[in-house]
Amino acid sequence: MLLSVATIVVVVAIAFPLALWLLQERLIFLPQPLSEAQRAAIKHRHPAVREVFLDSGSHAWHLPGEPLVLYFGGNAEDVSWMLANRLPGVGWLLVNYPGYGASKGAPSEETISADALRWYDFAAKEIKPQKLFVFGRSLGSGPAVLLASERKPAGVILVTPFDSLIEVAKRHYPFLPVRYMLRHQFDSVSRAPTAGAPLLCLAAARDEVIPSSHARKLFDAWHGEKRWIELEEAGHNTTDGHPRFWDSIKSFIHG
Image (cartoon, one colour):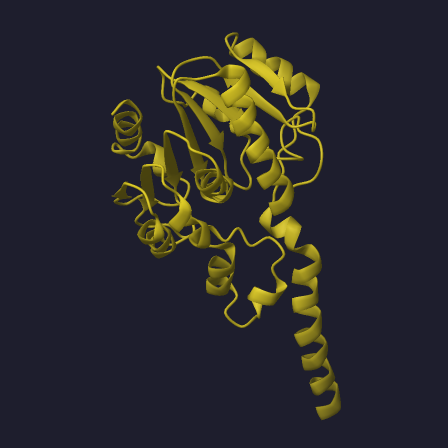
């Protein structure tokens, strides 16, 4: 009996971390692909929107306007929902990560980051907005901070961001060596000191997924001008309904 129990403990101790290592993409990324019928329905509901594809096969929804907001969503987000829930009076380029929406490929830190740079350069060259803002929500704060450190946007909006996925994973799995297990680290806090664009950081006071302390560490490391707003009573997925949410973003974009 003692041998059996010991064997079970060893098997579990090995199998659980191994399963997390092998399945981490499924835990981090939850793609929301769209069928042709769904895309047609979206275009029918929003006749002003157009679809944009990069040579890489990545897809985005574009609503013309000035200034332009380049939007990166959460890990389980179909960004088309923003077409009906966006701030009016500005343009939007809603990016689908690889494997999301109509984008080809598979999501990873590498593919998402590479596409973020491509989308920024595409927007700057082809759309040519007078001002180009970057908006990252949750997982999307990773590529947004990357752009802030390697490009020069007019401003950066981060909603429920994190310092790094390593630190978030350590909070949820304190018994695992996540620093050595996690392949997709999105180490935003190390990029923040080189980000010179103005920052608007919107944290949720009751964030059950990424507690606001992670956002605060990123905010404190930011090099450029910055503004912190903590949305009282808001959770990770309820920020948009807060009365200060869109008003703060509107004020930030229009100065």
